[in-house]
Image (tube, rainbow, N blue to C red; front, side, top):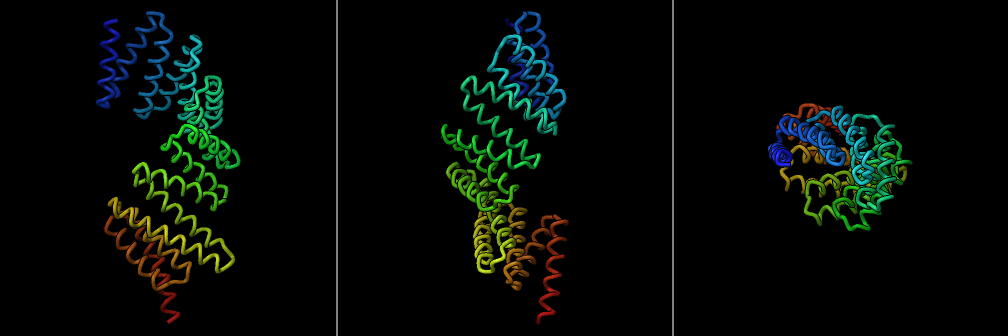
Amino acid sequence: MDKQIELLRAIRESLQANDYPRAIANLEKVVELARKNGDTSAMSRHLGNLALTYYRLGNPEQALIHFNAALDQARKDNDRMTQNGLLGNMGNILREVKRYDDAIKHLNEALLIAQELGDSRGRGIWLSNLGLVYDDLRKPQESIPLHEKAVKLARQMQDKPSLASRLGNLGNSYVVKGDYVQATENFKESIVLYDELGRKPEVALRVGIIGNLYAEMGRNESDGEIAFKRFHESLDYYGRAMTLTQELGDKASEAEVVRSIGHVLVDAGQLDDAAQYLDVAQQMFDALGLKKQAASSRKTLKRLIKFLEQEA
């Protein structure tokens, strides 16, 4: 027992110092100790921690090998709670390595166990992650119902951070579906929540996304009056996004917003104003050393100036 306590202390200290190789070495020792003692429950826990450490080290293959070993032990012990967590974590990693069919299988199994255990928190996480798998597969018809269920659970649990994140996921799925109006509603609600949580970078990101969505709605609109309204709404959100990026000191994102404003002004027919914004965006990108973005703004600006000269 003293040896186990000593090893666990060393593991904790290694993880706190981000010394993953040392943590792995000691986790392997504590797994072997549990094996010798015939403690399947401890083996499952330590193998799971070993898998997570390999994942943090950037080795998903070894992580999956050790998760499978942990799952075998948890099944021998009939430990449904541990199985639930292991299957869900495996599903997330399988998604990251693009083994989507396996990810779906593991996450669905985790969902069944979470339902069996009455684990609402786990169920919400696995629903959300399963939705992300279908998002990767560009199947919004599959992802949207899953994200909606995950959102509903976060509301029931009054979990603001999870609700804000899941509303963003739902919004992304509606973007893929092409339903920009519904997507903006999801992003707007997530903005309110992130603002309440004091997470300004998340607010800035989603305010900019809404600007993009209104711009696309304007470009896709055949009615000139409605299109002009959408462009005006887009510029309002871009203005908010620019203020937020300035407050955050995020120069690269600010330059992106300035360029986006220029593009919307082009679409709205306000060409002189557009030229000014595109010129500023180009200068900002140049100053940041972002050559590709600067070249793109410069190219658009040259075309616009040529058009203005022809019109004069």
